Length: 423
Ligand code: IMP
Image (cartoon, rainbow, N blue to C red; front, side, top):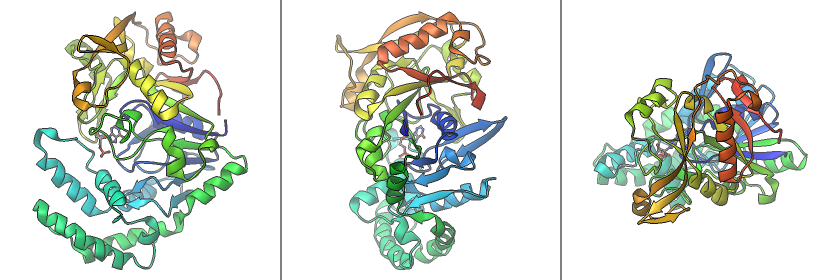
């Protein structure tokens, strides 16, 4: 395959950055196509940890060209900080002239709206992502083309008038157009050289036979179209969204690797049918620190592997293969469960109900498999895995109907084991 997309199969944090980084070594181009700096991708190389919120994981490979395409919402302040921090001073980056710009008023309005919500809070990342996508749909957004162009100041003034009427309604401080302009024109100056029509660029690259890796953020269950609405993000983190958000033909995409944790985790609010409530098992996960989220200083909720979700992700997103991450975290558990279907009002169902209140009511039907005690972090082939771990992976393949082409047993690059080369 020459063009492939990496998709999170559930609620994000599946370890996509690590799989992307691994595949990026073979890619000519790595492109992010949706979301913004609500995403956090950690990649660990030689013991050193790199956190990217906007830049594609390809920036760690000196020859790779990195793209931020038109479906993204880009915070210039965050992006400039990330670029300045990079050791790779020969950064090859292009930003779409159609991508929307996250501005300080987006963050302020989001915080004000969230704090008004009380117990209905979505627990968003408060990075202004939702309000920026809203402005795009309302057709009052600011695009990169305008941001780095000569009319930035005039456009900003017009938008700030609208935003100040929102600020008055929300009873928050009004925005000062001149102050924002002073700070943001500096970012515009720095970013201007990267801004191009990324759709035209991508089409040329793909036609010339180069390898392109699309890097999804979040996961299918956070998709605004197919996820647990309203507890979702504001874009579509699916393979189906790539052509629209990157400006390429659907038939230019050869495959989609779904990245699934060997269990399930969820940050933020919203239902999770396989949530684990046994304190001893929760403690097992907490001890590993894998689910600790430094940005929010909390542990993510954890649950058992949910094959209803994988089948949903496969159908609505399109997935051709599967990567299973953090298998090592399950080592030491006596038993491991996999949800095979749900129960709703006494009936078995194997789909995700559209209505959030109904989804909150479902319980999972489980298959229980024996665990393994061995530390598997040094395993480098499938055959070296304990038999119970092999059986666990085979069961996931059988239930999802997807072939596992990669699995990982730790955060380092060499702890990613490829079972089949597909890219
Ligand atoms: P937003 O994307 O900031 O609007 O947040 C909407 C929901 O998506 C919240 O529940 C967030 O916790 C969740 N979310 C957004 N980005 C990520 C991510 O990268 N990983 C996990 N959850 C995320």
